[in-house]
Amino acid sequence: MTCYFLSLGGNLGDRRGRLARALAALEKGGVRVLRSSSLYRTQPVGFADQPWFYNQVVKVSTKLEPADLLEFIKKVEKDMGRRPARKNRPRPIDIDILLAKDRTVFTKNLVVPHPRMTERNFVLVPLLEIAPGAVHPILKKKISELRDQCLDKSAVIKIKSKGGRLDSREQ
Image 1 (tube, one colour):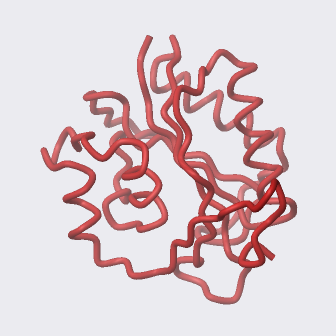
Image 2: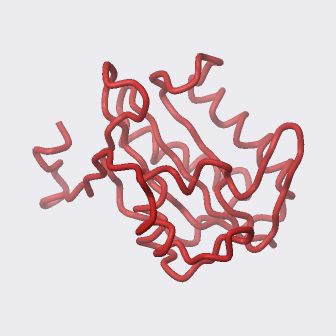
């Protein structure tokens, strides 16, 4: 079994529901969720004229090798309505492999650790919540260090629920 950290996000439709359905689909396919960050409402990066995202990071365990996990993730995204589109545009679901334990992967279709994870507040903040001591296998820096050094200042707001109801900041 290999442990991975995955980033999930989306900014179309029922964002909270889609993240929950994505996690359920991963579990159904043999990807066991070990730990989940809080949900975060995050400012779009690169394009301001679109809805804000909901993002989350999860630690998972699976027998799948990185390339097979990527293939499965792409199927989950497609099944949930994701269509090929221009980069940084609105999407119902986006799932990225951030880390694969202490492994590195460099192929045509997959690079792990994710090449832009250190530049993204919406990845580092939830990752820091569940794995502050994790170390980037190439940079040899803890996630807490990477977050402190990140130049991305886009808003990342933890979503809090009150009695199971959505906080007003979620609306």
